[in-house]
Every structure is written in C-alpha cells, then in structure tokens.
Length: 208
Image (cartoon, rainbow, N blue to C red):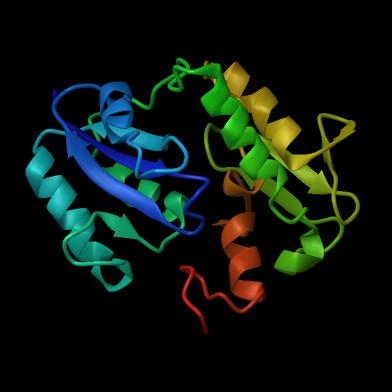
C-alpha cells in the first residue's frame, strides 16, 4: 500500500500532520496514539498514490512555510487546503469509513474537547445572514445561514455539526462526530479558517 494522509487532532488546534504509510491509515493512527499525545488523531483525508515518497515530499515542500518544525510533519494550515492538493495526486480516496477510534472512551474525550471549544457564531468569521454554504466533501450539498449559530439544511433548522453528520453518514462514514466548521465552506474556504483569520490568528494559525 502507498498512502499519504492528512490527520488532525483536537489537542492541537490549527495543526495538521501530513505523512505516509505502507500499512493502513487506521494502523498508522493507532501507532501514533502514544502517551505523549493527549488525544487520538483523526483522519481528515487519505489517498492512495502512485509515488508515495514523492507525493509526501511535494506536499511538505508546498506547505514548507507553514511547517512547525523542520524535523516534524506538522503544519499550521487548514486541512481542506492540504486535501485540495492531495486530491490532485490521488489514485483512490482511502479515507477510513469505519470507526478509527478503538476505545469508546477516546471518542468521548474527543467529543468533550470539541464541546469545550468556544461556540461558533457566524459573525466570528464575517459570514453574513443568508449566506450560502457548500460542503467540503461530496457534491451538491448546501446550507443557508439563518442566524448567528444555525443554518437551514434541507428545509430544517439545524447546526453545522449536525448537518455535517447527516452528510458524512450518507457518504458512508461511520464516525460522524465532527466539527462542522472544518467541513462547511463559505466562498471556497472553511468556516474554521475564516474564523481564525478574523480573530487575528491568521489564515494558517499564525499570530498576525
């Protein structure tokens, strides 16, 4: 197997890990879940590629200005941006559809970390009422902002995370507990990236 992956971690907001593996993404994530990491990694996107080493290196070079440390595979960049590039080099999408977290307590810890985040409001990202959002995975999914916290999705008033869970379930993903701001886009950028930029953190998590 020749796979390049993009991982996120709720304990490391604003960071992604871009790496490669010759086993499975699930096995790689389990291997990274050591005592030095507070929470398990989650796979944002993974792809089978024809030349794994070259593809990983190309991504590291492309995002080199946002690398946290030269000897590590961590970057301060929105995962959707990295995925957009990796998709161009992919031969197959192998993002895990099954549950990647083995211990139920691990998923509870991830969910708790998400709940502890400040509640997202659209004014945090300068997104106006009535704005049309698109979904960053799959085609034909959209939602409309109806107030500072909720959207209209398929005629129902709901949250970003709840609507994202519905879509991911339809796309065949078992783990649908996600942060909606990482998947919903406004004008081609994730709400999470827009929020961070608007709050003065910068588009890639750097202080501005």
